[in-house]
Amino acid sequence: MRDRAYRAMDGDLTIPAPNGNSGAETVYRLREGIERFLVTDINNPGAANTVQSALPIMCDLLSNNPAVDAFNHVPGGCNVLYMDGHCEFLRYPGQRLITPAMATLLGTVVAAFDN
Image (tube, rainbow, N blue to C red):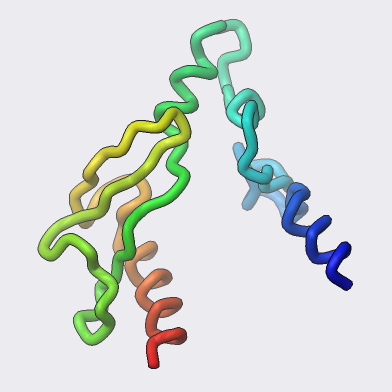
């Protein structure tokens, strides 16, 4: 059972298209070099560097529910870590990762684990 769980965590996830990376049916596991699968312009050698600087890896907690203590920067946004190692503060609500839909999702998850 443990080996099966490790294999599942260490592999890519197959889901119905177009919900995967780049509209495909695969969500790729985070690993070194994964950005080459997300490059849309294969003729541009610098595109992989551009993808790394635009690929969000992790962000602060975020919620649009004031009853849930899950907003690290009140008022206004989240720190987002990108694959190339830089961190950027994005204002809430934003266009990319820091959206009302993401705030609802993360707020619901945090509320489920809040005791």
